[in-house]
Image (cartoon, rainbow, N blue to C red):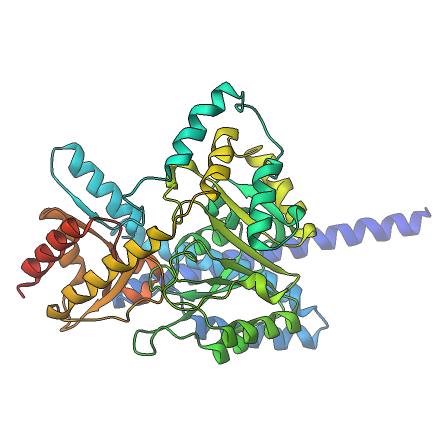
Amino acid sequence: MSEENELKLEKLRDDMRLVTADIIKLVDKRMNIASQIGNIKNNLMMKIEDVSVEQDIARYVHDKGTQVGLNNEFIGRLLNLLFLESIRIQKEKTSNKETKLDHMAMFLKAKQLESEGKKIIHLEVGEPDYMPPVSVKHELLKTFEKRHVHYTQTTGIPLLRKSIAKERSVRDDNVIVSPGARFAVFSAMVSTLSVGDEIVIFEPAWPAYRDCANFIGVKVKAIKTTVEQKWDLDLEELEKMITPNTKMIVLNSPNNPTGKIIQQREIEYILKLARKNNIFVLSDEVYSMYSYIPYRSILEFEYDKSIMVSSFSKSHAMTGFRVGYAIASKNIIDKISKIQAIAVTSVAEPMQYAAVAAMKSNVTNNATLMKKRLDFIRRELKDIPCDFINPDGGMYYFLRFKNNIDVNKIIFDLLNEGVAVAPGTGFGESYFDFIRISACQPIKLLNEGLKILRKVMNV
C-alpha cells in the first residue's frame, strides 16, 4: 500500500469517527426531545404510542433518504430502533406512577390474597379447572419404569412429532415440540426477525406477541378492532400499514380475549398480501379446539412462510406440562430448532410422552363443557350494563362497561369482594374500559362471581 493511500485511509477513518460521534450527539438530542414529549403527554394523559405521528415522520425521513440514495429498508430499521427507544423513554415517565394492569398482575394479586386466607374466584386466567385425560396420569407413572427421563432431540421425540404430523396432515420434519406455545412464538420470532424489523398484530391481542417482539428489538404495529364492528379485521388498514420493514403478520384465531374466529376470505386476503410482500404469517391456534363455528387453520392454505403454533395447555388441560409445538416449512423449523437448542435443549421427556398419551384421548367434551359455561355467562350478562359480542370460540367473554364506569375501581372492588378478572388494558391500551371474564370455573363459581359483579356495580 502506497504512503498516499495509507494517509487517505487514515483520513477516512478519522472522518468516520467524527461522523459517528455526530450521529450519537444527534441521537442524544432526539432522545431529549422524546423525554420532553413524554412529560407533556403525561400531563395531558395522552397515550404514548401514536401510529399516525410515526407514519408522518417515516414518510418525511424516507423521502429525504430516497433523495440521497439510501435503501428504504435500511432507513426503516434505523427509524424503528429510534421509535422503540423514544417509546421506552416516554414510558419511563409513567412507569413509576402506575403499574400496568394485565391478567398476570391480577393473578399475582389474587394469589397474594389467597396466601393471606382470602377466598378468590379466579375469572382472570385461562386455565381449565378440569384435569388432563386419565391416560396422561398412567403414562406419567410409566415414564420412570420405561426410563423416559433423559434428554431428547431438540425438535422433540419422534413418536410425538409423528403423532402431531399425522393429526395435522404434514410431514414429521415440519414439526417442532416446544416448552409451551409462548416459547414457540418467541423462538419463531427470534429465528425469522431482526432488530429494526416490524410486525403487525390485531388488537385486542395476547400480550406475549408484543412482549416477545419488543424484547428482540422488533417494532410492533397494532391494528385496533372494535366491539362495534364485531371484532372484524380491518384488512384495508393492514394493507396500508405494510412497509419494506414489515416481516411478519401475527394472527390469533380463536382470538384471546374476544373469541373471534378469522374467516376463510380474510385468511386468503392476508396471505395474498403476505405473498406479495414476502412476509411471514404466525398463526396462534392454541384455542382452535374450542371453536363453536366452522374453523380453518392456516395450514390448509399451504403458504411456505406460515408458522402455526399450538399447545396441549388448553385443549387437554395441560397448562403445567409446558408442551407446545410449531408447524412450518423444514427451513423454518431448522431455524427454530437452533434457537431452542441454545435456550432449553428440549422439552422434558416425561412431558412429551404424556402428550402422546393425551393425543390418543377424546377431549371433545372439554369444548362442549366450555361452550355450556360461556352460554351461562351470556345469560347472566343481560342484567349488566355492558357491550359484548358472543365469542366464536375460546373460553372468554370480553366486555365493555357502559355509562363511563371507572373500570379500575370495579376491578379492585371485585378483588376485595373475592373475584379476580382480567383488565382490558392487558390486551391493548385502547381497551381500558373492558374486562375479560374466563369461563374456566364450574358454573356454581361463575354464578357466584357474576352475582358479586352485579353487587359491585349496583345492578
